[in-house]
Image 1 (cartoon, rainbow over the protein chains, first blue to last red):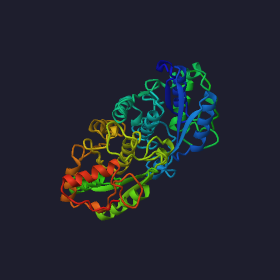
Image 2 (image 1 turned 30 degrees about the horizontal axis):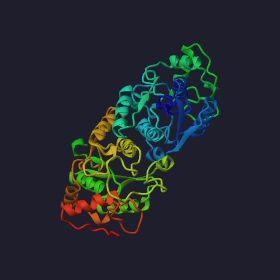
Image 3 (image 1 turned 90 degrees about the vertical axis):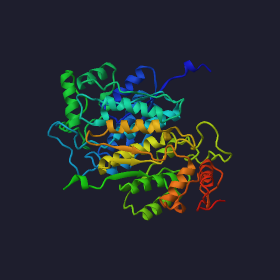
Image 4 (image 1 turned 135 degrees about the vertical axis):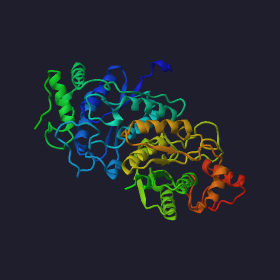
Length: 226
Length: 226
């Protein structure tokens, strides 16, 4: 067997939102076999995100998928996304870490993705974090992800070598929209809104960032808004 | 309120085994309020470990406890501890990473402990990893834990400052036994064996390490062996 001909695998953490979907498409365009990883963690929009993930995987031809049920964050509470008694803010993005922050969520997601990568023999994990033009979550910063990559390599077998790719980390939302259009990402299948309603609310932080991206990219968001 | 008088909290990852129990007792002896964290992950000895954890917490007077159900490792498989079709080796400790290794288990445990620490305002996480005189798991190395501490601090709120304590990392098993006896740790309540039988098997890696520690410490292990 010629190891050089082996298809490289990428573990793609995919929420069903625009950013992680684009990140997965970027890995696909580089020739990786995509292994999709999705988390159900009792977030408000759990069923919507899951069906988006399934539809996106179908559109991408992803066959190897992990859908992981994580009761931990509900047990922990402490975030407007998992404690449904805390309101999702709709007044616009403010300074500081918002109440939608879920403590060390990406740390837990990346740790599980690392375990899957080690089992599957994948060399890459992709995550759709955005540092600028974002909600201000500390676990979306490049410095953190880079450090986590080192930790993962130190804490797994010596032969396991994992690179964490975060192709959007320094992009503005308008650049993300543009790149998604260029790569023909099926944005109509994605869901970004924090609220669990029929149509996207248009006023939570996540909708505001997305809509502003489309506006600056001079493009039309194909999903419906209230 | 005088913040200096606030009792410091330590999140103690506790399996019910000798090492993590001693680590928690060491934190208690330093004056920390202990918050016990235990994981059910479909490991072979899940029910035994859980009852040991509960009994140890009662003996320690720990009231704040998190028992976390994690189906992930069963879904992942890839270890003799979670895939019950893989035999636990009993022939003695060999070089390399053994089949009982669970991919990046401590990474996932520490990430969840970090989320709990951030919510609870705890300044310390303790973990009972042992580097020398151990099973050779990569996620038990000091270099990894130190890196993970940095990752956790970069990936949580700026005001969150977490130190990961691993007081046993450079101890031999005989020193661990001696320290546990000095601190009057109720070793009769702990369980280390990888097998799920009435009495500890005495021949899996974990039993061998424990028994050798008692032998070199010239002490009697209070638990029963087959």
